[in-house]
Image 1 (spheres, rainbow, N blue to C red):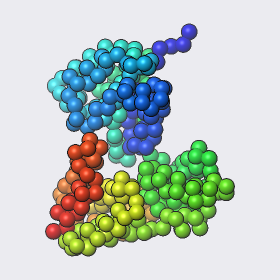
Image 2 (image 1 turned 180 degrees about the vertical axis):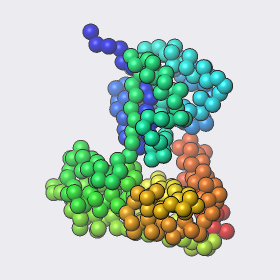
Image 3 (image 1 turned 180 degrees about the horizontal axis):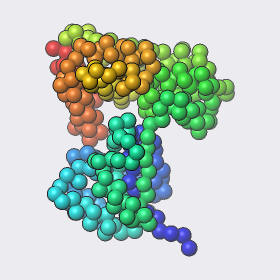
Image 4 (image 1 turned 90 degrees about the horizontal axis):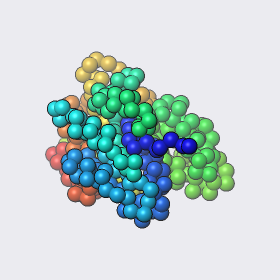
Length: 328
């Protein structure tokens, strides 16, 4: 006799793409897309309180074996004193509910399994192994990222040469979301009939995207609002705005890391762990900004991300407003 399925799924890490895909596989088990949508409740960061989530967890699934409840940033409910209510919710879940706790963590800043933000959840999960599935999703780095690209290409029915994978990894700054987007373009280009080569990456994934990001950030640093908006519009032109947004978020994250390293007297190359050319460009840009400003911009980008996902903000309009504001 098979064991009951877990009622709690604790997913954490910095690889948002892998976490999202794993959750989608859980939802696929609910049936077709319309049934999956009817039996899914998604509580995004700062969107709902525990009353609403408890009600969602207690609801009976409709024409499906289970109901999936997804909580982004469950650490927000651990800030209560004490956080016993969340633990009671976990312990009282019906078998017809699959509660997914999805937490974004910067894995480059943590060591081992010490994750202060969600430690109470990890402790609870380890004490209830039969009820919980724990998965850590970490972005592969360095040579591992190129290998991940090759595996990804294979899973999509194609192939990419190692040298081409290494070049693509440099172009996307090790970001899985951007890498997946570019890899699919390349696979479509070669029609999956031959391996992707360096020439293909150079032709279809040039540094123009990064150049537009660098140009936009340069203009912000120079307080040239017109030039900054022009750079942003070039970046947005012809691309999915979410793709452009992730490039901008990645750039400001690198700038913040570089600024922190400069302030601490540390070589930014060691902190950034990107291609030396990119590291030198980011470091030069970081010298134009103070850390408080970079922190404000980065946090504003996170707010825009939440707003766009909840329908409260138009991504392109919010980006243009941000760039215009910070480049004054």
